[in-house]
Structure formats: C-alpha cells, structure tokens
Amino acid sequence: MRTPYTCRQCLSLLRNPGRPGRRQLQLRFSQNPRPLAHNHSTKCPPPPSPKLALPKRSLSTTPNRASGQAFEPREYIDAEGNRRTLVLNEDNLFNSFTNSPIPQIRKRAAFMRQHAYCPHPSHKPTRAPNNPTDLEARKSSENGTPPAHVDFECPDCGIPVYCCEEHWADDYEAHLDATKLLTYPITIASVLNELSPYNIRNGRMTPEGLKSFSALRHTLHPPRTGGDNTWKNARIAPPAVRLFILGARAESSLPRETWMQLSYLFHRVQFSLNFIGPESMANRENELPLPERTPLNPFGAVIEDRISNSMKISTFVDYFHNIHKTGYFYPYDPYFDCFVVFHPGFGNPASAHEWEETLPLLLETKVPIIATGYSPGDTQQDVEFLTKRFGNEMDMLLNPGENRFRSLRWDLNDLDPHDVTCSNFGVYAFRGKRYEATKKEEEKEVHSDRTA
Image 1: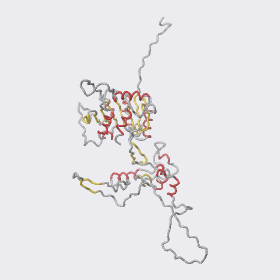
Image 2: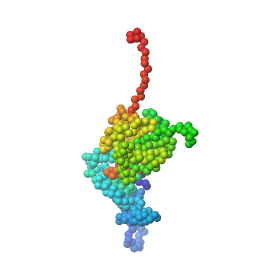
Image 3: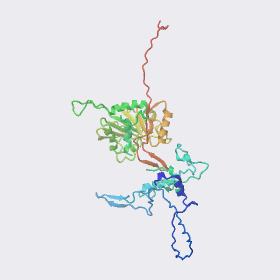
Image 4: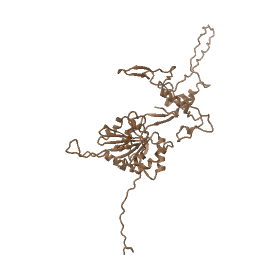
C-alpha cells in the first residue's frame, strides 16, 4: 500500500498495535515440544489455537538507511589527473539530512532541530498564522502542550518535520513532501508570446492587458514582408527590446545560455536585458569584477555584449529609483520596454520598504510590469498590497494565478520545514493607469440669447 493512500483506521492500528480484544496473528512455537502420550480416551482434546500477531508495517516507501558510522569521503584521481573527493557513490545516494555525507546538509538538519517547531495541533502556537491554510492556525493557545522542536525525521523524505513518531503518524495527511533554470526566461516569454496560454477566454488576460501586450507582440513578431540576407532588400533593424529585471538576485547569475532561450523564441528581434538591484552581483565578484564608474559608465554596469549578436546583458548594482531619477533609461516605450520582478515581496513587511520609492516610479512609466510569487499566499499578499495602495493608479493586465511554466523543484524553509515554496509559482501583471484623451465635439447653440 502506498503511503499517500493510508487510511486513518490503518494509522490508528499502527499507532496502537497492542490494542486489547484484537486477535494476535503471530505464530509461537514451543522450543521443547511435549512427548506424544498414548491417550485411551475416544475424545481427543482440541489442539491449542496458534496465537497470531499483526506485524507492524512501516509507513515509509523507502527503507531506513541510518548507518551506524559516519560516511568518510575518500580522495581519488580522475582520468585527467586531477585530485578529487568522492562524497557519494552508488550505495549511498539516498540519505536522511542527519546521516547525509555532505556537511552542509547535516548542518542544515541541525539548524532545523534548533529553530523549527512541531506543527502538530496538540501543541500551543509559536506565532500568529499568516493565512487560513497555515498549519499554525490549527493550534489552540488555551488547550495544548508546550511547543517542541522537530526531532523525528520522516522516513520518506529524510527531513525532520515532527517532534516524535506518534505526531508524524497522527498528522500524516498534513505532511508535505519535499520533493529551477528555464522557469525564469520561459515565464517572461509565456506572457509576451502571441500564443500565450493566458488570454481573455480563460479569464487570465484583461482588456487592458491585451492592449499593452499587443504592442509588445507587434515588436516581437514583426511582419515577414521585406528584408532578407541581401543588400537589395536591406531593411533598418528596429531597436532592441529592453527587459528590466528589478531586484535581481539568483536570476542574474544564471548561465547565459538560459537567457538565450528568449532569442530562440523571438529570433527576429534583439534583446537588451538589464539586471538591476543591490544583490545582482552577489557571489560573482571574482567572476566579473565591478568596473569603475566613468562618464561613459556612470553606474559601473557590467556589460556583456558578446554573448550573441541578438542579446546584450547589463548588470547594475544599484536601486532602480536611483538610476531612474537621472534619466539614464529614458525614454520608455510601451512597444519595446517591459519590467519584470521575480518574487518581489511587495506586501511582505520585511521587504516592503525596499519598493516604497520604486513602485510609484514604475507606475509613471505606463509600461507593463510582470511579477511572480513563490506560493499562492505570497502572490495573494502582494496583489492585495498593490490593490490597497495603488488601486486607483494602476490597471491589472494579467489576473493572478498559477504559472504554467513554474519551477518543478520545491524548496524548504529551514525555520518551518512545512513551508514548501516553488520558484515562480504564481504570475500576474500590472501597469500604471493611462488616461486617454478624447476630443469632444463642439455643440452649436440654437435659439439662445448669446447667439441672437
């Protein structure tokens, strides 16, 4: 029986294997058998019924791999003569966090045991719930045992998730499995492409969004008439499509071949990617040292213009509002420009102050802004903040919902292993409200004192 389909009755049986009144199914044989006696009675006594006991079945789909001794990596020399360290082999590929041969994972398991709390509803809450689906919302502050740190590792995923095995088995249905590269460029392309899965028919695209993205699609899908590889039909190339990735972190360090997917999908246009944010060059100083600020490069941008003849990548280690105020990126064109923010945390109290000065400037550009969230709660929190703060100043272009091209990798929160997130889980889009000027026809007054 697979574990996701284990019923509550079976779980209760496994938690209490010695329940009174249940027949035992375990055969017991005597080591000293009694000798056969000749009984002259015509009635033979009935043979003693064997005592059977139900064997205790493990709920895990994988065996327990806890080893008695720690794994000792060994050094070896590869075919090229380089000295390397063997950490994993074919016999120990799957290990729990505590018994992992990788020191960083063992350190992470120890961090969880010290800071994460058991989510079982029998404990008292340790914090205020973030949303109705939060596991902390099930706990009662009046009736409950004191909070306890996680200590029991799930046999399936090897992550410490509960304080004991009994709470893990009792709350098995609420256990979340802990099970990201192309999701960043393909998420952008899925919204901008003319064959986007988000349209008005399925309710994701709004009429205002159709207007804004139609302008970009007109540029990304130019007409095929005119222009070829000869000078006879030479044609002036349009400007490059500029994508501003604000608050860039991990996405700025992705392999450049990953971002080349945009050029493969829109092969008739050129792209200029601008990664902007104070953490856009984190852990990359040795790879690409920051250049000095000069009159030609006032913000010390790292420019990579030899990736391809159709793509240029620039990285700015600064906030967008500081660059925007100087007019460095002016003018903004809705036919060639688009803003993208991955997991911005607009409504998160820990990061909302970083966007306080940037958001009004973004809405002033009247350019589409594509945003993502790492969970349904995070996406809804950001949308509610934008609606409450800038409801009269913005138009929703793409209604929030699940991203068709989200990452399939799930990440864990060390402070709460049940908080499972996913890169680019939700996607939505908005822009500053545009007021179209309409010309009112002049009405002629008839039979008026002023016209008499």
